[in-house]
Image (cartoon, rainbow, N blue to C red):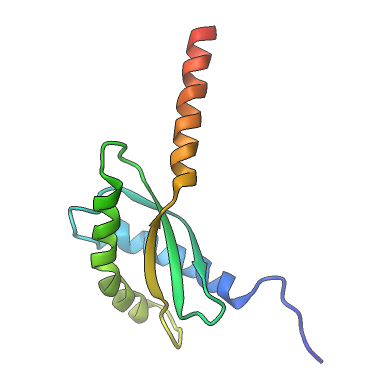
Length: 120
């Protein structure tokens, strides 16, 4: 008898990684190039060997490329910390990618605020 899961293992690992990486970046990442970052989503491969970590930058004056490079520099350190915290056979290789959707959301919110101010 086979069981079907609504929630794939990769999805569960993704949620776990998102929570732990957010904590690590908030409390333990010491690279000044990283700044204020939020993890928006993580896409883990089905074999759990790699993970695309999508992030947004909260400080609008920060250079996105600088943040991305800082996160990539810290990725092996973060993987080691994840290895100590999580009970996984393999910790995925982390690749950080700027989430342009968050940037678009900020722009749309700003435009809507300006329209609201003009109208009211």
